[in-house]
Length: 454
Image (tube, rainbow, N blue to C red; front, side, top):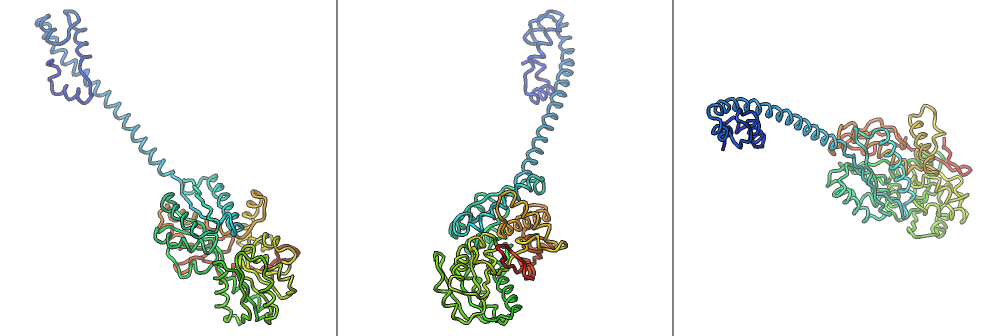
């Protein structure tokens, strides 16, 4: 081993640089007064004597200078590499920060409740696309992950588990029906994930559940709005006819519960099955019940069948439907028999009839315009529920400053003054809907179109 390599400082530099000193030995040979071709300093000294020894000392100094310069170059390179590594780490952090905000959804896009789920999914897709085009939320894009439960509660539960456990979503907006919603409530409560339901039953938010919210007006509110209108018409005896679905049963129960409060007597109470295609038998019984008006608690095709059969059996009493059929699709399915039917609904169906100073007017007008331009079909309140659900979540994330689920939940619960398609929302720890009865309008079908009852 050469004496040069035995010098501690050189050994340190050599190990630090991680290379041999053969280059320096070559430099020594080139500088020797005795010529070149030496393989070591010992050989140089042996052939050149004192001159070689002198060269050895000079070469040590030169080697120190060379190694120092090489160490400096290495250090500079290390700093550059360190800077690159730091930049890479920052970029990696930036990439992490740019992870999408995952919004999960399970909807009844097909099946008997498709008239609910289809506009809901279309709305979510349209609004997510718009938000992303405008820069996203907190500098992050929204990623919409949706599943079609077909109106099946068990499928809804399966998809919700997938959203929570595999897709690891930040929030869930969905549950087109009361049945699919209630099947998922225990899962989101256990997973502690914000969930905004798009279904109508009051039982979804009463009693209040920590992680569950909803956007549609409740079935109880629908009963109350209808009974207020009945009393304004000097009517007090009503017949109920309802379907067998979760919403139908819930609304029937709520109407029976609140009727006495409004001085309304229920004189008949008929039901029909989900697969029934003729309700003339039930309506014939109602005709002889002494009722002054009829209230149909239901959604889907059932209410349209009831409406057609209503005229066929010769009933001319006022007919009320629920907000579960608040769309032009119901009017089309019912045909001329829908004329004169009343129901409580959101302002979204009649934006052109709102006063210019109504805070909802610009919101519902813009949503209706965008939806109908994109999908070439009539807007419905059901898509509006999805719009409000998404915008409430986005607002909560912005106010929370993150997607931390507990912070987003708290922000949702503290929502005040949100103007949506369903009304002005003011939530609280005891109210996870945030809408009052005034958020409902009473509408009537006139000449095949919606009109507002003044």
